[in-house]
Image (cartoon, rainbow, N blue to C red; front, side, top):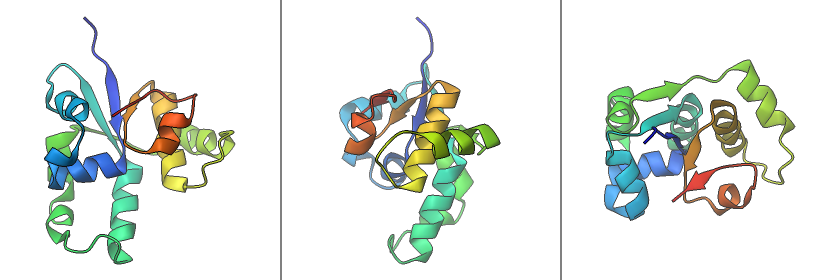
Length: 132
């Protein structure tokens, strides 16, 4: 049985760090499995920090103090943003304007990963492999 590579999206990562019971049972199982490769996107760090600074994620100081440590407990590997990821995100034929989602989708496509997400827009985009 081979290992599957998963890229956890921003919302799912935030839930895994702050409220794991809010994840789907399938997402919890994948995240807790030692047999899967779990990735977090560098774009997620920017998205969460940006939203926190804008006041959209109040009360999450503890997440940003030691952010990398918290993330690695969920997803041990971080995918940097490469030129290929950026160009793929910009060229996606997808009526979803969220730049963070577009970048995470592009990273998953380039890296051959399945996205752990509750986002319906990602589930509906046929070019992506998703799970929730």
